[in-house]
Image 1 (cartoon, rainbow over the protein chains, first blue to last red):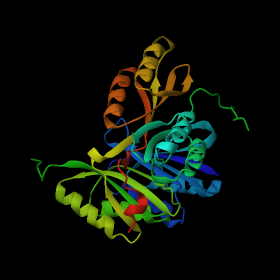
Image 2: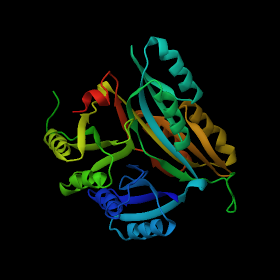
Image 3: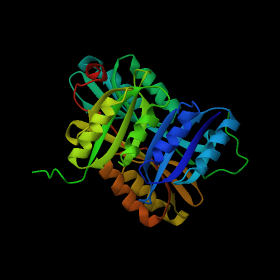
Length: 167
Length: 173
């Protein structure tokens, strides 16, 4: 099972190391992590995507809640949340290949950040499925540089409790 | 002249081996010395064995230099890159949930359009918005949405790529 942990913590030095240490000690490789400020200056939100058995994830959540400086732990199910990730990617493309790369960018709604004689840098956002397809499409040209933010998520509002995603 | 003692923000991109525990080591490096991390994000690079950690921290020049040295010393660190603002493209992604009754929806949708943001979820009394941009743009849209009542925000933290020809390969030791 794949789960997104949305963890609200006090913005103190050391919190992140406690949180990531908890996963590391149990031999969990975190799939992605993103930590950023919230509306409240004192509070930071850490988003972690982890993969594991349901009871193991449940156990991790319980232990997270026990940590000092952790205010709130929300487990967001993948199907009931909007998930997004931002990717900056530099693709090798000389003037001949540039049009092709821009076409792909266009199809994915990615925007161009920079163009040089032999490369194009793109900014793309989407859920992990979408970003994976885009990166796959760009790999053909040669990716020279890439930076990803890791996943963030917010629960859907506009759906009833018994909503089930389409298969 | 820049003041060397002044507290400043700095962005580091750290290329590390993609193993579990590496992030914990990086994080504990900061906590052990009481340095705070403003934002942090981790993702794999085009080479699946390498992860890129982008982190924003603050301190005076000595502290930042210290941090750079400590990061370079970690066994799993491949390379530490300085992301100074002039030579890099910086972006952040933010999801914002705004409380907005039907009558006010038009106003919010207008803000969304101006900032080239996207609506990704809508319900009777709320809108969820996706927006990407640099720090200034994000601050501006949050400022405009605040009066409408922001219910929830999730931010990725900043990622940065150098604009020039420098690549991961050419910088790898």
